[in-house]
Length: 403
Ligand SMILES: C[S@@+](CC[C@H](N)C(=O)[O-])C[C@H]1O[C@@H](n2cnc3c(N)ncnc32)[C@H](O)[C@@H]1O
Image (tube, rainbow, N blue to C red; front, side, top):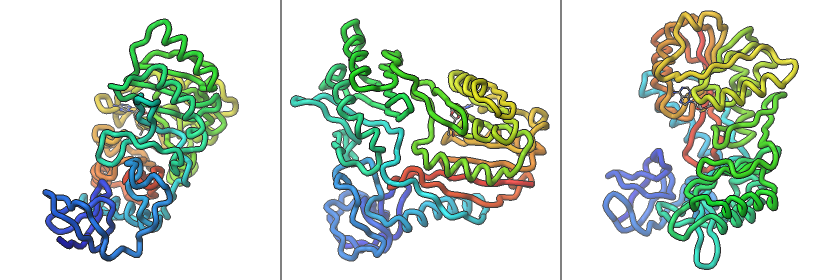
C-alpha cells in the first residue's frame, strides 16, 4: 500500500487519509508499507520531504525520547506555531506570533530517566519507541553534559537499590550543589540500603537523594539561581526543563508586562518568574504546593534589593483569587498546569487588571482560557512560542493579553 502523508498528529506521527498513522514521516512524503489496522507496518519512504534531515542523534531510531529528530528545525518551529494557531482558530481567535525560540541541543538540566537492573548490570535511558524496553543513550543530544556525567553515579544507585523485576524512575536536576536525584520504584529501604545509598551520594557528589519520598542524604544544597536569588526547590518540584527555555519564557513575560508597580504571579511554583520580576516590581506569588511557596519565601527573604514579595499557598482551581482580591494589581502572570486555569481565568475576566502574561504548556487549554478573556474584553496582542522540549511534540507559549 502506498500513502501520502497529509499532516502531523499531536504525537508527531504522520497521518495519511484513512486515517493511517505512520510514525517518523512528514507531510508530503509518499510512503509504502503493509497496512496493520490504522498503521503502516515496515514503512519505506518513497518520496522524502525537503524538510527531512538525518537525525542528529545516533540513538534516534531506537530511543523514544525524541519524536521529531527527522524534521528540520524550521519545519518543527513552523509546525509548533501552526498547532497553536489551529487551537486558537478552534476558539475563533487569531493573533501575531513573535519569532519562536528553541532551546539548544544538550540543554536539558532536568530529565526523568527509566532504569532497571539486568543480568549483566544496569540499563538507564528513555523508553524505546512504543515499548516498555529501555534504550541506552550514552550520546544523547538532549541531556545537558552534566546529566550525562552523572550516569555512573546513577548506575551505582540502581545497582544498589534496583531490582530486575521493577523499573525505577530517576528524576535528575542539575543544581549548583550537584545533581539532585529523585528515585521512585526502588527497593524498600532498610538500614543497610540507606547507608549504601548515602555513601554513593558522597562518592558521586550528588547534592541530594530522595528515595521513594524519603530524603536519604543532603550532601550540598540543591540550589538554583533565579534572577539574583538562590532557591532550594523541594525534591521533585516543578522546574523549567532548560535554563534557556526558562530565560526565553521570562523574557517574553517581561515584554508582555512592561513596567509595572505591583503584579500577581498565579501558579508561581518556586518563583521562576516572581524572583527575577521582583527586581523591578512588587510581586504577590500564589501557588498550591506549600513546600514550593516556602522555598520561594525563604529565597525572597534572603535576597537583598528586591521589591516586596508576598506569598500565598492556595488551591487556585478550588479557590481562585476573586475580582476584589485582584483590584490592587496592575498586571498578572498566570502559568497553570496542563489542565489550564478555567476558574481563575473566569475571575481574571471579571477583573480590571490591564495586562496579563499568560504562560502555557498546552495550546488547547490555553485557547479555551484565552477565549474567556477575549469575550470579557481583553485583546490577544501576541504569542511567543517557546520550544523548550526540542525534537518533541511538546509546545510552550507566552501570550500578552491586555485591555
Ligand atoms: C507549569 S507550573 C509553573 C510554575 C512556575 N510558574 C514556573 O515557571 O516554575 C504550574 C504550577 O502550578 C502549581 N499548581 C498545580 N495545580 C495547582 C492548583 N490547583 N492551585 C495552585 N497551584 C497549582 C504546580 O505546583 C506548579 O508549580
